[in-house]
Picture 1 (cartoon, rainbow, N blue to C red):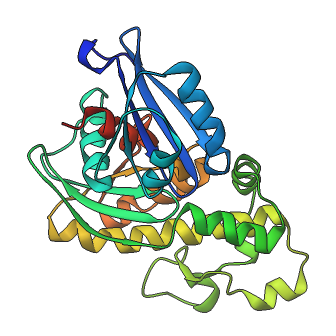
Picture 2: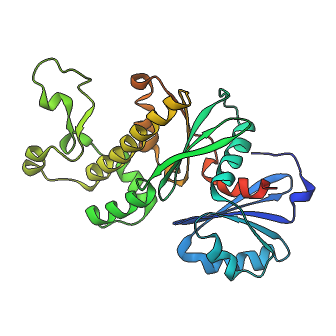
Picture 3: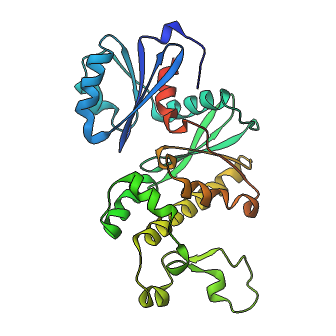
Length: 277
């Protein structure tokens, strides 16, 4: 992804210090150069900044911005998180091949979820939820004992929700009032669960399905208030997670919405910090 050179930004580093990950972006040879670190390795981030960007001004946003700011020796400016997110997503969308209407909804799924109304002139945070990547990691560990995000998403992609989730068609013997493939109860097919051995793949598929459905059911009413049918999903929860994207795409026709997942969308906060003035 190539961006026009901005010489005044070469001594800046945009940093999104979130509840799970620390993401950085800086200009390198006319391009945005991206990096991601686990929050638990925050001292490695400090060392990296000292070695690679000793004189750079750090534009830090995110929930852990104050923690990181106290550890570094660089000049620091703290950037409001929601303004950084919306400013960054605009910049990323402008340089993509996506064609969007003037008004759209941005759903940022990181550790938790934040929802914003965005257009080319203004942005407003509408709401949020604790349902997000943090919930995915926590429940995945409680249910399967696994903690590696990439392993979780790869297993989930091979899973089958049919033996754990109760669908509408499992309740109605004849014609149902709504689509039979819709989820009637997440993790609710007790009779089948008791009869069959449950695989981690299936549990994780159901967990990601529940999170995707919960986020979408929260986002759609907000989209209607704008009003818009365009929903842009960003955040690290979508990185290397094809199942959650598939689950959200699945509802496009049913709810008459258009879903978009911009490349590098998880770096919106860091990019917005870099561009903040």
